[in-house]
Image (cartoon, rainbow, N blue to C red; front, side):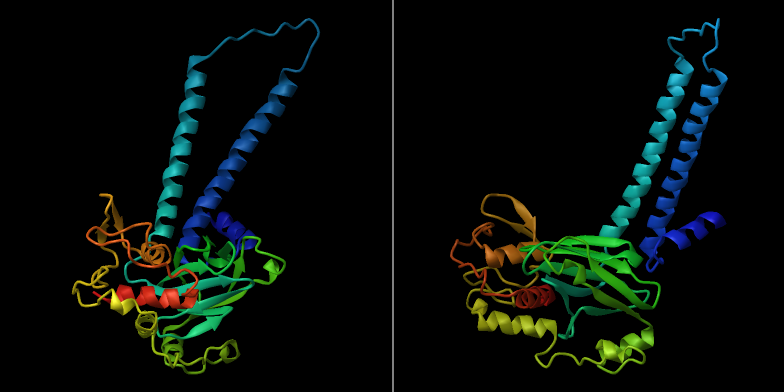
Length: 326
């Protein structure tokens, strides 16, 4: 076990999150399982090649089958594969299922940089700040082509796709700086699409949220103050006013031309075709950009498309506002 941990420390990035440790344990299990069967198969092959090498006047025995041997090499590999499947699925399920109280950061991939939006309205480019030992969920979208958000120290990676939202979450356990990469070729400067992820201690996180300078990383933008335009919810409320959304949608449950925002996010929505959908980030985005795709029961197909009229930053703000209307 100690040797396995030493091997992981020497050959893998640091374990910067809880999920990283779980993936590494599975990786080491697969590694040593492969070593065991390599030695068993190749060692057996060499042994039998020497022991039963060709000799004059020796007639080998012709063996047609062996029920016990056939049962062993069928049952044991099946059990091993099922263990790998269950183990892998449990870690994967944990990796894609964030806690309800996860702190949310909006991530926008652009050629060739990463942009981050926070709940207090501030925005950073190619650097992001998160608290240590707290679940954090990144809600990601792309402004142009497919990117892939990859943090090796956390063992998390997720494609960032134009026109839709994807997400990834983690609970960072190692304070300090961690490297972010784009793991999907996205153009001529793909290799330069890097960002720094700073995991802050509790006192540092409180100071950063207050817009104060951070000792040792002030040059990294730690002192950026919250946006003067208000927090992300306020920004979203303003967008819905400027774009005229309030003419057809209310936030107090009162009926208008379109569905109300109140209690919308996360609710089950019945459509005119009889099917139902969950009102998540992707449903709201589609309803804004392609409103005729899914029409809510009891309402007509009268909403125009706002595709191209709302940029990624505004879309994130609008969705944050709708999520806040309970």
